[in-house]
Amino acid sequence: AQSVTQLGSHVSVSEGALVLLRCNYSSSVPPYLFWYVQYPNQGLQLLLKYTSAATLVKGINGFEAEFKKSETSFHLTKPSAHMSDAAEYFCAVSSNQGAQKLVFGQGTRLTINP
Amino acid sequence: DGGITQSPKYLFRKEGQNVTLSCEQNLNHDAMYWYRQDPGQGLRLIYYSQIVNDFQKGDIAEGYSVSREKKESFPLTVTSAQKNPTAFYLCASSIAGPTYNEQFFGPGTRLTVL
Image (cartoon, rainbow over all chains, first blue to last red; front, side, top):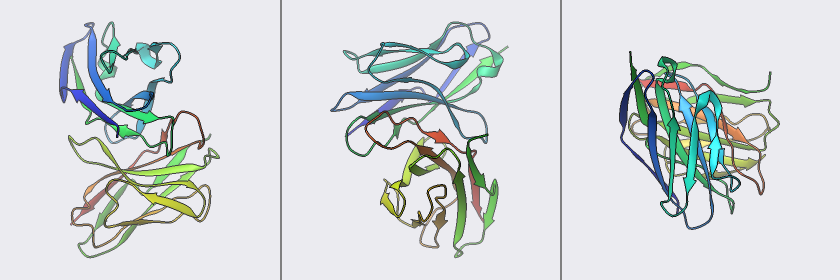
């Protein structure tokens, strides 16, 4: 069975500061990992994905994430936060075997302080 | 433009009534999904379909029903058997087969039971 844990349901940073959103996964098979962003009352938009190629993955809007197998982590970072980054972020895991369902974490709400 | 549409955006229902949420996609995707989103719980899978005329229960299927008569359409019915139907419902689609499962999401329908 696969699962995802996002550490911190709320994260608050100042504009221009580093953004770090934590995600740990559990998977018995090589995982595919995703970060999605959701703005209020909207659907989810894919930020980036890891599919067993490079371990450092670059996404849209200046975000990136690093796959660390030894730590079973896939943390999301952005060097300098912008006000427009305020949203909810979801980490998700899927497998490359069987029915390809996504399992989502609980989400982290990111607040940017001016 | 290719994408996923969900209608209506807001839906109000009286207790004891069935209601159907629409999901249409023109991405030519074989697989479609329905999720329920509640605050602090992330997204939970209700039903998914990998091919026309076939669908499987997700993690929280009780009180819901679906059909998949056309490739581009995957309507969800919330029945009176669903005890707590007030939530934000998201539809998604993806390609099917032995590849990573990047899912594309619609804008969502917010259902409120009065």
